[in-house]
Amino acid sequence: MKPQIFITGGSGYIGSRLIKKLLEEGGYRIHALVRRGSENKLPEGCNIIYGNALDAGSYKYGIPNGSVFIHLVGVPHPSPAKKELFKKIDAVSIQQAVSAARDRHVSHFIYLSVSQYPSGIMREYQLVKAAGEALLKQSGFGASIIRPWYVIGPGRWWPVLLKPFFWLASLIPSWAAKAKHFDTVTIEQMINTLMVAVKNTAAGIKHYEIEDIRQQQYQPYRLPAAFWTMPKVQ
Image 1 (tube, rainbow, N blue to C red):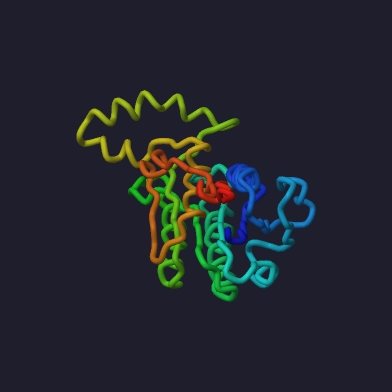
Image 2: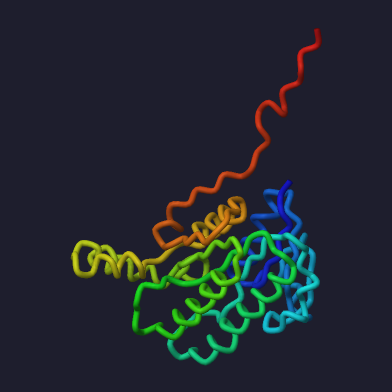
């Protein structure tokens, strides 16, 4: 039996696509946190939970006991100019999410973080996400931590212009590691990785780095062939 899913950020760029993928596969009961007035941004077919991601008390009783908690809330289009917003939204929302998840005894926690390779320019963002990861490690949950850098897809194609730079940088030994950690992943690769994380609940902490995200191949769950084989009538 598939687990119930509780998701924050379900109306966002990644979250809305993930919910659609989960619904397409079927068998998942999805509970999506949303503010009143934004429910029309959620894909049809999920159970709407009204609340504020910055206040665990406003939504924790909407989390099914033992469910998989997927936390995707964060400042959209991160940039160095938004460092105060990272503290107000990304930092607070993960603190509240961990608190709520602990109270509801979630079976697995999936967290959208960011590459932790030193960048300099996005240091504040990385520090906030690192603090979120530390909270999960202290919580004792089994957790999957997804660490992309930039996700490309519809409406977010401009980083493709940088691909020649990443390719050239990968050929220079002193730049190769940085190029690998700051390269892009596609929205399809992100959804595949999240689906793999949902399907593979495990004890401890599992990290999905950029190279891991690119390599994930999600295979929908199918009943074994024997299930469909009718016994022969003697």
